[in-house]
Image 1 (cartoon, chains in turn green, blue):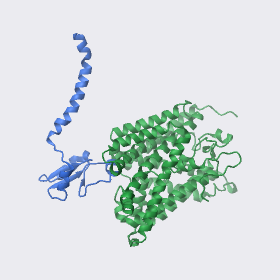
Image 2: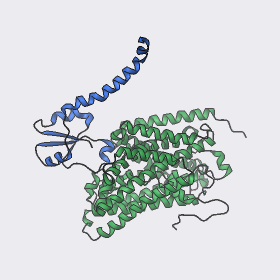
Image 3: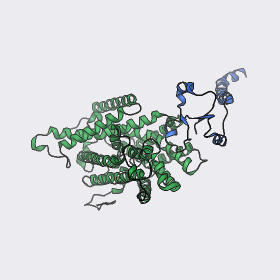
Image 4: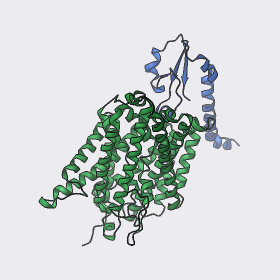
Amino acid sequence: MFTLLSRPKDNVKQSAWPLWAYGLGLMVMPDNLALASQFAGQLGIFAPLILAVSVLIFFSFVRCYANLNPIYGSTDSQEKEGPNYLGTWLVYYPLVIRFFAAILLATGLTVSSGFVFNEVFVYWFPNFAFAFMLLAGMGGLQLLRKTHRSRAQLVFVSTVLLGLAILVVTGLITGLFQDRVRAIEAHQVTISGLFLPLLLLLGFDIGIYPGDNSLAPPPESTKILKRAIAVFAGFLIFWVMTALLHVDGLRLANTSIAHLISAREIGGQAGRVIMGVMIIAGSCAAVNALFEGVVRLTQHFSRKGMLPQMNLLPKASVLVMTAVAAFLMTSGLAGEELLESLIRVTLLMWLGHYGLITAKNLLGMCQKSGSDQGVVHGQNRFQLMATAIITFGGILVLVLTGDQPMLMVAIMIVTICAVLIAGGIYTTLRPSRSG
Amino acid sequence: MLKKCVGYMPMILILGSVLGLMVAPVSASGDVGIMSKDALKALLGSDEVVILDVRTGRDWRSSEFKIQGAQRAKAKEIDKWSADLPMDKKLVLYCA
């Protein structure tokens, strides 16, 4: 049931562990650990239940992805389809979202890591110096071979999961002997809190390498991604319960460093050090995964003629992302609330990508009549409809309850318009298909 | 000779501006003292001091070190909160 490496089938090469490593890359970022801990403080005993429901939503996303076979590109006929699964007008949407997410999260996460390095490990080492070094390191990692990058990614992700496991086991053993049961209550059940877990499981699609013929086609890769989501959600559920055993929920809900406080209460200074390592490793995992995701998608778009066919274009994109992130750090954006709003809106648009794929599947199903409607990888029309409603409803709620809702709406509108313009240009200029 | 000096004038002006910008903050900040952490530590808990944490964004969110009793105050909104501060107490602005 739990396999890290798939058995080879026929002549298709299996590459399961990169799928795990990159699929979990964005999920293990430290912002998610903090958010999950805050979320636990808000919803208390209901937090694991809401997380479990989110897992089901993401299973639906994975199955909808699987139904759009072109993104896997594992056969010649599917390669010809190209990444037009959302239609040609929105074809650049996933690339634009990943590109901006990479820049913004690289800026924020490396700065956060710098503070952690300074405050947990080496007091005299300037935090921004560490942040720049980390950013340069992640950019430099992209210059190495694919195998080395993937192995580094596996180390980053494994470090975070191992740290979580240590803290959870330690916390459960010590916490269950304390009279903490009464402290696990919901303090701030808000409608936005109910949808926050949708942001914690984003990024599984980075694990999919479009056009990578070594990638197992569905259903094998679908199973692997669902297992990765389930495993990480399981870790999160145990983490939130452990945090609640040791820290008052109200305190967790009202602090920006809920994860650090929880680790400190669980394991003292050792717990703090472990969480410090997890934060830095998680930042590396997320930034490396995002850079890799942009590179892969850029390569695929170049092959399909949607971007200039230049060998250096993918590497140039890494240089641009690294340089822009460095500039944003220098300009002080990390010290502005604007960065948090930009990151939040980018992640919500990423979630919107999943919603669009779900809607696309639903539309395709509705256009078939009668007995042809069938199911999409085990889901019927009503399940898809529920997934789409929860997704878009969640996006709306999280935008409206955010710190700068008007700014987020404006950014969404501008981004979608830019994507539509680029898609329109591509639609107009692309060579017509023959036959 | 005069023509050469005129040719170098833009560079001289630029360098002079840069030097001036470097000196200006130092001279302008001459009236605001800097307190050592030991001096601040001695004052913690005292009614004679008001500590203002002016960090924002990730600078504040990511930091584990937050002085107990400090009030958050956004540097860019100084006009909003400065009028409410007690002028008979020592004001300590903390950003790192």
